Amino acid sequence: MILGFLAEGPLHGYELRRKMEQLHGYARAISDGTIYPAIRRLVKADALTEQLEPGQGAALRKTLHLTEHGRELLATRLRDADGHDITDPARFFVVLAFLSLVPDEADRRAVLARRLDFLERPVSFFSDHGRPLRANQIEDPYRRGILVSAIASNRAERAWLHEQLDPPVTSPKENS
Image (spheres, rainbow, N blue to C red):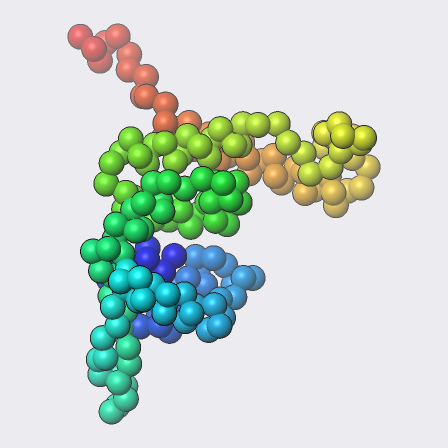
């Protein structure tokens, strides 16, 4: 997220954290103890630079800038997204938020294809002796609600992914 938001332009730490919280959701607050050590590691890795600029009044503030190496690192992380970056919804949505920054369409499509492949595997949150349960087999209404919501979300996301990945169907009339 840090690299992705800085690819859109320089930010100071507070603005960056606010944008990250908006994307990640307020249920998952991003603490200073998380963001500032990550920024220090990225500066040390030459992915970011810090510049002192005027803030409010006489105070100076550090503004973060993405370096060319940072852009390359971001593109690589997005292009190579796999594992939890594909299977965890929150992490995948972060990848998706910045996927347009990957220059090659084939690379972007490969990421979407990995997510679709994961979503099309049969899974369930609940099982009986190793056998996945369907929503109509779950008596507890709250557990059934989890499964019903997950199924609806899965269908919607798969439909969108198919829209992005499947070639548009043209009618014979359009081809003539």
